Image 1 (cartoon, rainbow, N blue to C red):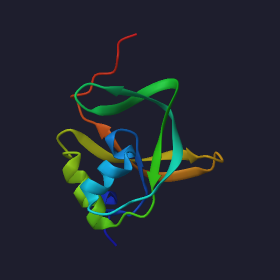
Image 2: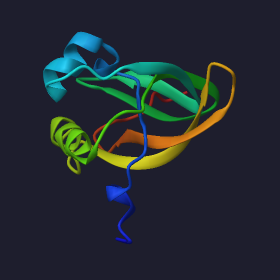
Image 3: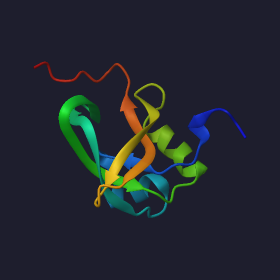
Length: 117
């Protein structure tokens, strides 16, 4: 077993352009169903691309894509320009029944600047 956790197969939480099933299928080359989920403690922003950032009391709604394989994750890493624009990190989201789901998420690198409050 590899120690590099970036190769671990987990569901993926999406919150931006990949929420659109048509766009998602264009990128992956096949349909990938998503289930509604919520990421607590993060808000969603947008500059040229969607991104999320830590924000107490906030939540970001999105989808969990549970049926992805290693090739799908590699394709999405390429699409998200990992590690230049995003990194893929493990987080925990809640499904519609508030059950926790451990999954991947794309977090922005230094290009994304959260709003100043």
